[in-house]
Image 1: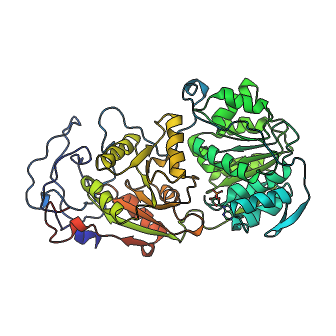
Image 2: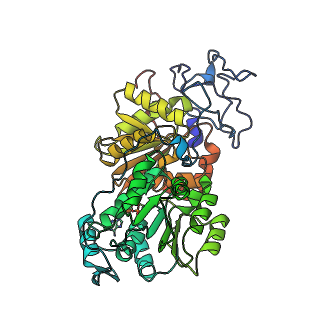
Image 3: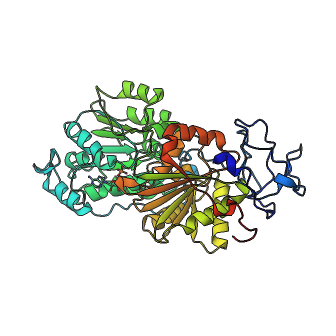
Length: 501
Ligand code: AMP
């Protein structure tokens, strides 16, 4: 079917637009699937040349042909180097952050009981204290998730833990519930620190912990770059007991003095593999050296590459290992689909795809480059489709505002780089669209893991263009062809009249 599409062409000539630039030389195709596209070629100096009038099968408006994997730098936007965001941007240190003025968690007065409480209420196989049971009832957690079932008992017993679990499995409460039991709100110093790779995750984890600590007098703060450091210092001075932060800002606060970790009982490394990908390993080692050796160390990662293994052997004491699910496979409740679409037709493919969704459902669209995200949002808005952008090139207060309105369900369509591909939990996301095919299998699994959270249904659509066949073949081999449905775009249907879409 894939290859049959190659013989179908739309009769309408598609004009050359930023989204529709002339393709670079096609080179060798991995699996030949049709004649080469001679519509246009870049000039030797890299500038683009207007496409000659197409003839025969070079007429524009066709499904993609297989191209060798050397992608053009950026499809859209124009001007300046495209900001690539294969993984989220590392946190900047404070010099660059001071002016961003992001809102943050205030050291509001905390209520509830402090000090250890008797654990008399069952939650699955463990017993929790009355204030924790009440908080769990408030958030509607009736029973532990599989990862919680595995980690709660050893964590409550103070053991070190390595949890291999995909995001969306409930691991935050897996360490949050034991922290709610062990942290003493009567003691005005930091007793637990959670390190996370991104600012958004810092906020999300701090919010989840605050919900679990609702009836315990525990002050939790999120510290991350882009928010005024003075307020974070004030919250620490106010006696915060739990700190959730990105490594860069945590180091800053340690260097400046207001953050002291010498009485930390528990240190959690959340999404540890992503933190290492970003290059946080030296910061993490430094932070670990500020904590007592007697601490409990808990590490969560979706995958455990050699670097993580070394970290585990160096810093964890006889950890218990847990693994939930296949860490590198999508959950079953996500319906995986793809369609072959020429790069120049992707916007039309998106509009057609969006039309099939219920307007009330939330959609997350992934693109590779920051400026391509902005380009797409502009074009959606021009068509009166409300969408917003999020990527590392935005100011922190803009990122916060967009994320908040997406979490609140006010924003229905969010277009993102890989910044939100991991860990971010917005349960109402019903659809993920890979407008740009992920280049790696892991990237695919993480992106589509933003939908179908906690067993809910969700769909994931991947656009496969002429440059993406190699990446897509690898994804298909990995997830299994039987798990991927091909969707035909109406405008590639035989006999589809020009100009009717
Ligand atoms: P996490 O993997 O920590 O990001 O959690 C994913 C989602 O699971 C979040 O929306 C949590 O609110 C939810 N969750 C966590 N634990 C439970 C539970 N025991 N029962 C129901 N939902 C849960």
